[in-house]
Every structure is written in structure tokens, then in C-alpha cells.
Image 1 (cartoon, rainbow, N blue to C red):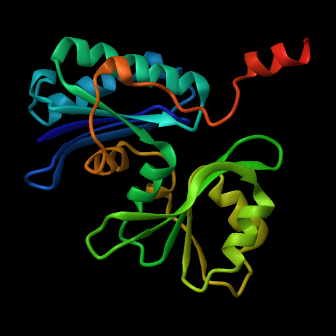
Image 2 (image 1 turned 90 degrees about the horizontal axis):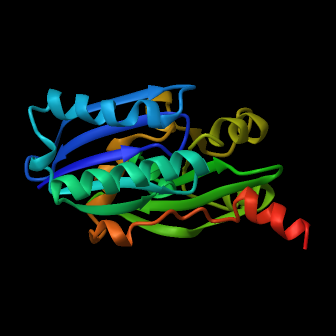
Amino acid sequence: MLILGIDTSGKTASSAVYDSEQKVFLSEASIYTRLTHSQIIISLCNDVLKRAEKNISDIDIIAVANGPGSYTGLRIGISSVKAMSFVSGAKVCGISTLESLAYNNIAFQGIICSVIKARENLVYASAYCPNSKGVLHNIIDEQIMPSDDLIHFINTQEMPVLLCGDGAEDLYNQKYSKSKLNVNLAPPHTRLQNACGICLASLYHNPVTPEDLSVSYMQKVKAEKDLEKHK
């Protein structure tokens, strides 16, 4: 089975082609960019397909980050995947950004904690522990929470903890860079969103039709918040 993975949930635009039978990534590309993802994601997908010597018609499943993350980036990713699915006939799969970050670091022996910046003192977070077969077991459900609550959870763990996501470095530098606790910061190449994690996570989710693919913001968008203020 061939999987095309796409992530536009953060500042990194990423795409990858994974062959689940050979268990190998045929092609992968990531760009940390200030450009709008709509300007580059389709060409990035075309590039990884070309380098993998595949066409979009060869793809069985198109997997995409569906949140949390940048509202605009998520909408661009979802819309792009729906368009490609309608053209190719491939099924689609929405993958949590937090889960995919953890799958980027699946080799870590301990607790993998995904942290994405939200607003003020809040973060999107979840924690996972991989089993012997490389499948993640959820310890903390995905949620938006005060960073102090996440810190309390980390401080009470006996197993080593790995922090990943765009909120990981700030949290590590503030609380754990000089701590005696066994808390680690994921290396740069696995710390941020990457389509490889999207592909790996999609192996454990059922694909859907493009009509059923939607964004999971995990909090109200700005327009909804502004509307509530004026009521």
C-alpha cells in the first residue's frame, strides 16, 4: 500500500511517500517557510511523487494533519487532500498533529510528550508510550491545557520523557535544561511536524471518503471568539 502524507499544520510544509509493504519511505521533503502553504504544498507533493517515481493515481491513501495547529494551514492541507482524492480516487485519512509528532519519535524508550503552542499559558498536548511493536499507547488524551498542568504531569513520571512539537523547546529551556529529571528535548530533525509521522500514524487509522474529512481545531477559531464578545 502506498501512502502520501501531508502536513501543513505549522510553519513546516512537508510531504512523504511511504510503501507500507516494504516499510520504507520512497521520498520525503520538508520546508520551513514563511510562505503560505497554498503556494507550495501541491508542488511539494508533485516533487516527492516524481522522486519516488510514482503518480498520484498510484497512491492508495492520502493522509493529512487535521489538527491542532495553524487554522489557515490546516484548512489548506485538508482542501488540497480533498482535491487530490477526487482526482485520484484515493481514500483519505485525517491524523492528529500531536499523534504524528509522537510517531516521528517512535524509537524513544519512554513517554513521548507532544506540545504545540496555543495562546498565553495554554498548550495543545498529549502523551504517548510506544509498545514493543512500535505502536503508540495514549497516556494523556489530546487536549488544550495550562502549561502548568502539563509540567505537573511530566514531573510525576518515573519513565524518561521526550518533548517534541513547536512548544517543546520553550518548555524544556524554562523547566528542564538544568533539571535532574530525565526529561529530554527531541532533536531538530524530529522535533517539528513532518509528513513521515503522518504516514506512520495512518497505518493505525481507518481511511474515509473526502466528504468525511474535517479539521479538528480543539478550540474555537478567532471569528467565533469575536462573535461571542459582541453578543
